[in-house]
Length: 130
Image (cartoon, rainbow, N blue to C red; front, side, top):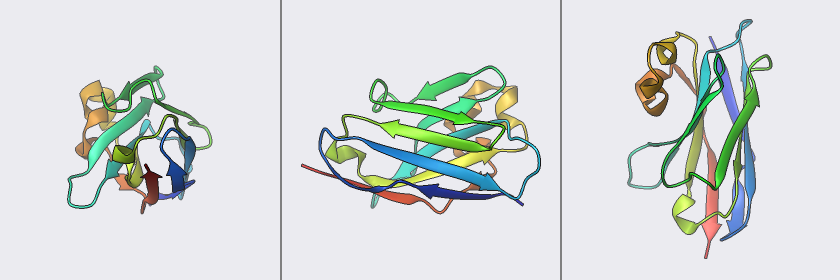
C-alpha cells in the first residue's frame, strides 16, 4: 500500500556532499522507522543508516559513521540522508525503506536488517569520482 520515492542522487567528486530524500505515499498513518541501504554493482545490499521515530534511535554503519546523518519527519513520512566527505567507495544505488509492521519496535537490531522493513523505494544512483 505504501510507495517510496527517493531523490537527490547524482555525480559528485570525492570529498563533496549530497543529500538524499525519500517520501512515502499511500498510507494515512505514520510508520515506525525508516532506513537507508545501498547496493554497489556485484555486491549485496548493505545497511547505511536508520531512524526509529518512537525514541529517536539512530544507527549508522561503521563505514559511514561521522560522515552521514539521517533525519526526517515521521508525520510527513519523510526521511533524509545528508552525506558528507563522500568517497568513491560510497558509489552505489541508495534505497530507502520503511517499517509499517512494527518489527523494528521489538528490537533495534532489526533496524540493521532488510527483513525489518516492508516497503522499499526504487533507488537513486550516487556516483563519487576520484
